[in-house]
Length: 228
Image 1 (tube, rainbow, N blue to C red):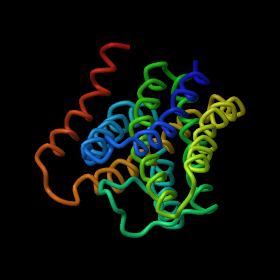
Image 2 (tube, rainbow, N blue to C red):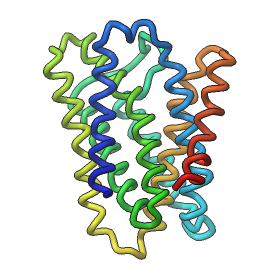
Image 3 (tube, helix red, strand yellow):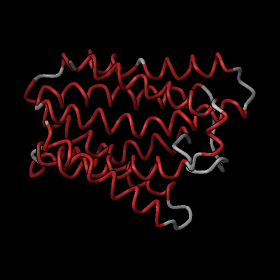
């Protein structure tokens, strides 16, 4: 099941490129997607991951995940963009490496979360899918601006997406006693992605519909918990 969930996450990277390549994309306000994604990622951290992470003893790993992803984002300068144009980004091997690292950690999180409790694995997968679609859109946007051909854009997204199953496979080498540490680390990365990346981009200008999108996204993990 973790491998299947990670493969579903792989499709989210590719889906971002597909959405960007479709003419209908120009009519979609990407801020709503970012708003829903930020709500899901932040809510999943607070209500699912942190309670399972034994936060009293593992708070340092939450901070490690948060600040490590801060450094990765600032080094590769690649994040989800809520506007049709992004101000400062780079596309290259460094950015691709950053995406791959992000996805490997997410893949590990999906598997470890599922082994800890299936509902946590499902919630992490949902959060990953929702925050990777806008990132896939951004990647396709930037690569197109850099005059990459569509086949190279999709190859890059596929190679980044395949890192989820790689991460899920690597999780088998993580001892069970390190599961809570791993979940704490993933919670930290989600808090950074949700607050600094997705939420900031969604709210470049005030929009009440975006606010409602964030709140709606925050309710989804709670709803999923009642169903799983």
